[in-house]
Structure formats: structure tokens, C-alpha cells
Image (cartoon, rainbow, N blue to C red; front, side):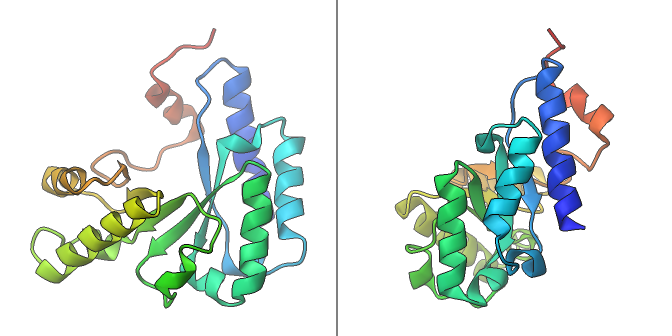
Length: 190
């Protein structure tokens, strides 16, 4: 099913661009099972190219657990994807069991802080410390940081104050259909 998700996401993004909407990078979750498959980088790249979409408009989200199953193989896949212009995010960061030393080796662009830390960041000093530390660490490694599960203005302000680059969650928008999403483009087709 993940092959279909990649193909459909790329097709939709390409369609929006052909209709004259602004070009955006679309994030696509890759399952651990798919990430472990042979030739995954080539297969994903071929799906992107077949949809007439430039690779820079695709961001693959991979959980840290999936990356740690076979670190050397994972790093080769990440390097190949990144070299082809595809953006890479480690999804649900902080919930897995990766060694921080791998962050400097992995070919990635973004860390996504898991919502389990963001949820109680205003009430739980330990969650606040973890979030602050992840943001600071990512910044020092020149990585983009996205906080998942932002649901209140207070959370958003806290994260912005700590230097978090981006946020996602119900505060900013709930899941919508492709047609409903066009409203958020803030532009009309040319």
C-alpha cells in the first residue's frame, strides 16, 4: 500500500502544480517494512519521476526505529535518496532507541519531535526539557525541526520561542481532502 501512497501523493502534487497552484513539498510516511525492501530508493525515485514531479517537492518521513534496524543499509538508502534531491525526515523523533551519534551520520534534513513530548510541554518539566534539548541539538546539526501534535497557542508560542522551525497539529489544520486543501494554497490557478 505504501507504493500506492507514494505514487498518489506525487500525482496529486504534480496535478496541483500543473493547475497553477504554488509548488509545495509534500511529506509522505514510509513504513518500516517498505523502507527495508530492496531497491526502495530507486523505486521511490521512479515513482516521483513518473508523476512529472521534481524530487525536491517530496519529503519522506521515516521513523527512527526503521532506521536503526540496519544502520549501514539505512544510511546508504538515505544517502541515495538525498543525493537524488529528495528531502528526508526522521519521524516521531524521541520515541525510538537510536543513538544520538547516528544523527550526525544519517543523511537527513529534518527531525520531527513526537507529539507525546509536545502534548504536555506546558505542564511537564521533563517534556519541556526534552523538547528544548532536541531543538537545540537539531539546530547545532543544521537540521530543520518540526513539532508534531500542536494543539494550543501556548504550545505554539513555547516552541517558537525555543527556535522550532515548523509545527503541525490540529491548531494549524485538520486533515482535509485534496479539493479542500486547495483553499489553503492562498492562490488561484493561473
